[in-house]
Image (cartoon, rainbow, N blue to C red; front, side):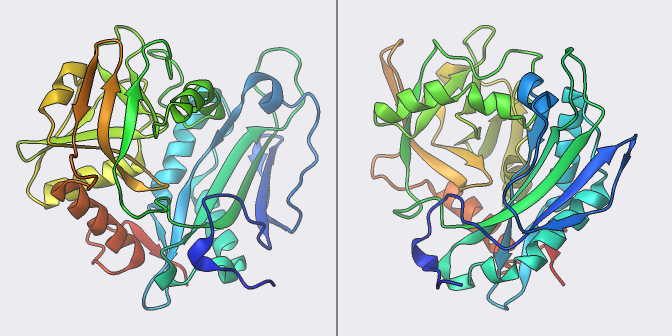
Length: 339
């Protein structure tokens, strides 16, 4: 194998040795299968291609200073994929099958888990989709579950820095009572045009408001939002927001640090009262927000004047990263050590 420059790998796809697959047919899941090929054979009438019967997850494995490999909150990802299956009428992958597939994929590709000092990690991508042929708009009877892995570098190339976001009221991420709370590809496809426009304008991503009234904060691109003020961690509550496992973790850690935690509707005007703000997700843990520009209202909400993250965001970021790498005690039972 070519020597990998661990310190300079990006956040993209790199071929690894094996992936794990499992098929659902005749009302039951089969055995896990190990594959070397990156490709698969799929029927042209598969429901995933025509009717969006698909969901995916994203989680990571980390090599600690002690050499041990740790996977973060694997069961929570399994349960969230089951929720997505309910929303798309797909067969649910049992938690034990999900966990066994993830562990097998990590173990078989152990040489691709980056070393501790690199700051990189092994990204794990479970994906579930309708593989059975169907022309009518109805669920498939056959499904495929795949877990593949790829090493990824740190999300922040320049370190843990703030970036700007922009509010665009002409775009919606998800309809109320729609698919926004499920981790399905359609939600991400719906964000591509707006996200690209934001990037072209020099912003990190688009900042969405609620689709019904355009009055409340929704999400930051494909990440959850949080704001800090008066020693309180505040994050939106909505039926169209993806339940981020990272956000859920940060709420617990904020409570551990003595902050009050509120999950509620946040009017857009309240942005002016926050001392710190961030987007959170698996890729970066926390993306601190420098400012949010609102051209329609001719306003700019500024959270950092020196380009540095706020003190509470920094504490939360390092605390969570410390747990993932084994540098901090895992008091909440979030980590699975790969044996």
